[in-house]
Length: 234
Ligand SMILES: Nc1ncnc2c1ncn2[C@@H]1O[C@H](COP(=O)(O)OP(=O)(O)OP(=O)(O)O)[C@@H](O)[C@H]1O
Ligand SMILES: [Mg+2]
Image (cartoon, rainbow, N blue to C red; front, side):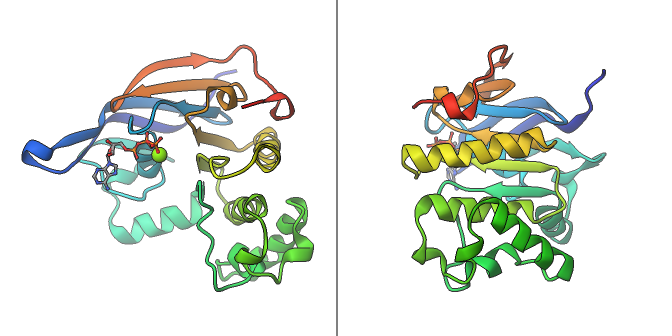
């Protein structure tokens, strides 16, 4: 069966600074991401992983190139359309959770106003094992629990795409593994996951591993030996 391209990235360039300080965070990156991929982006610190993920997430503007999602080039979006894209089309999970600290866990998951999403929030909190913590504030739960809240928040959108930037980077092994298991489950239910990490062992969970170096993609391989989250050690 032909797989559908869900995100098509063409010749993406992103620079920071100017003159002598000019540096290429992304230097002509092209990549087709297929529906239902579990794609890991690997590479050492500073190679451009987060920049690429942020561009896919519509968080910042590129210098040139295109990112085609649902037949539209998000690089051409104005700020209003980008805001809607971030709200509806992509879920984001960050290394340091990025929860809002002065609202409850439940409120973090229901940032969107629709009542349907409020209903769903309780189900999602139950799913990530945190229903009984729903009225606590983020600082009152552990890092691993905060990350599971962040995943529930990301899932409480109608998006098919989940972007994760070092989601286990700030967690101990046990909490990290719980997060990976959750991502594995979410993937098996049909979502497309793009996960950035510099931990090679975690990449073994993916069906596809893309490696970056100095703003470029230097390898893109299908992983024939997918390792279960349960078995990943790092
Ligand atoms: N806002 C910024 N201003 C200037 N330079 C930046 C900015 N963001 C990133 N860069 C530079 O762009 C390059 C790529 O950064 P990026 O954050 O994408 O790397 P990374 O692969 O995610 O690294 P890490 O594994 O450390 O998170 C780096 O050289 C970085 O210094
Ligand atoms: Mg990064």
